[in-house]
Amino acid sequence: IAGGTSSDSSIYFADGTSGAAQYAGWVQYEHDNNALTFGVNTSERFRITSSGQLLVNATSASISSAELFEVKSTGNGFSHFRNNHSGYAPIYIDNEYTNTAMAPLITITDGGGNRAGLLLDPNSVFDITGQGGISFSTGGTVGNATERLRIKNTGGVGINTTLIRNNRFLNIAAPSLD
Image (cartoon, rainbow, N blue to C red):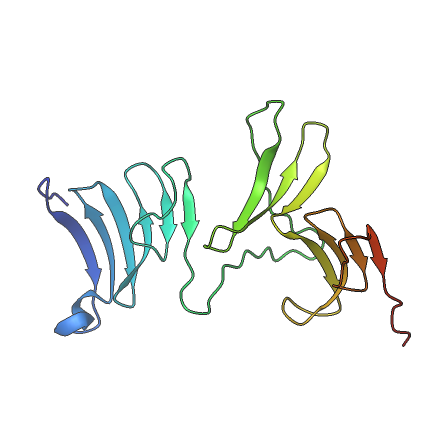
């Protein structure tokens, strides 16, 4: 399939002969920006950019040119990675560059500039960081679990309490006995 330098080469999958039914699905090469797109249910769902970035549910990258993979959820959606194996379900994040600095494995941001991260230093020490602090919860899913431990960004620690007084380093509340 050949196309001009500023046009597209496409394969369409139609389930009708008029309107959006003519392009319910597609594979399209955009010659003007050298991107390959895949459409499902009349919407673009997957794109490979000219620099090799893989974009899912995004028509343009909101990531830096050094980042290669973006999954954009819409509405209340979220990204989910699943391995269907009964005994072993890893997700590897591998930084093949070796140096002496701490390299972030996962950086989390809320879009408003607040950041947290999971890091591994050169001595294999696992580091959890949170701009405002870190908390550990049990007994439920995100949003309805009970917080058990909090470490504020000032170093104060609370066990079974979210009330951490600035003049105390360690704050402990008796747990409820069930």
